[in-house]
Amino acid sequence: LEIAIRSGMPLLLQDVGETLESFLEPVLLRQTFQSAGTLCLKLGDNTIEYSTDFRLYITTKLSNPHYLPEVQVKVSLLNFMITMDGLRAQLLEEVVAKEKPELQKEKNNLIVQGAENQKQMKEAEDKILEVLSKSEGNLLDDSSAVDILSDMKVFANEVAERQKV
Image (cartoon, rainbow, N blue to C red; front, top):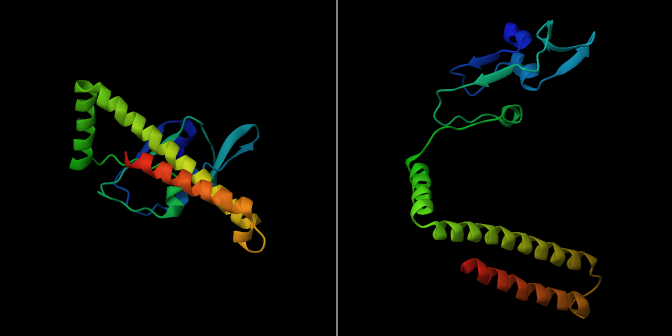
C-alpha cells in the first residue's frame, strides 16, 4: 500500500467483505497535507509522500454487499451485477431504438414531461405551504389565500391528467 501511494500506482484489494480495516480510512478520505512542499499522508505511524496519481480499487465476491453509511460516503460504489430483468429492459430499449425510433423519441419526451410535471407539482406544493404559513386567523376568511388554493387545486388536477396520458 505504501509503495503504491508513493509511486502513484493503482492498487487492487480483492475479496473484501462488508467492513474495511480502519487503517484505510486516511487513504479513503484522502487526508493529505503539505509537509516541506510535498503532499503527504499519515498512514498508521508513518508519514509518507502521496502521489495524486494513486488509485485504490476494492472488489468483493459478495453478490449484494451492504456497506455501512460511513463506508459509502468514503468510496464510490459500482455494482456490476446484471439481473435478467435489467438486461431484458436494456435489450428491449435497444431494439425499440433501432426498429421504431419514433417510439424511443416519444418515450424520452414522456420522461422529460414527467420530470417537468413533478417539478411543477413541487412548486405548487411549495406555494400552498407558503400561503398556509403566511395565513393569519381563519384561512377561509382570507380571500386571496382561498383563490390561490383553488387555482393550485385546478393546476394539480391538470398535471395529474397529463401524467395519466
